[in-house]
Image (cartoon, rainbow, N blue to C red):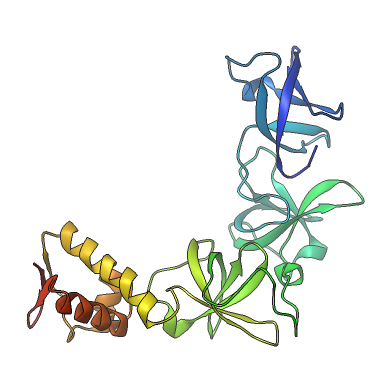
Length: 280
């Protein structure tokens, strides 16, 4: 059984406290009654998450935690103690962040980026706020599973003077430059992105838009068409509109907007007026 992950197990038997589930290697684990569906039967397979309860026993649950083993997440600190902090990860037992895994003393109510790992000495799931040491970026090494232009999953975890630091595919650290962010993103938000540059120093630049003029034009044009249809065919924006107004309404830069409406106009899909565009 894999602690910190979802396992597909078979119902072996029922007891007064719940049902025991087993794997093909003869291991079993308790699924408490409160997580057992009334229709559950012996021999049925269930997908459950395995972790340790407050008494340090392996336990199964059908609740979905906010983070899995060897993944990153941004979670809320709900309590602190003399030995560390505890964060809410969607299960009854809060997740522990020991002092040694904190960059600074965490405070209740803070939202903090963390990485979930398995402590080999105690076999317990533990969170670390020192996320930088868990990224797979290596100086002088270009990741074999990434290529420029590739679509990737992003988790926003930090804002810097340069822009937004993001987790790429739950594995690498990347940066979206501030002047290329045209949508509202906050800590913990997930979105799609595209690999812009894989640098020799191990750093990775990421774009929120597909790379290249031909690629960026099509989705932006579609976004404008969708918006026009949603608002009745007239959008009170033009190539003379304020960039902030364009970003707030369409989540794209003024440059991308002008390219997109130029293409739509050429294809005779819209007309461009002094202060608006109209769907044809």
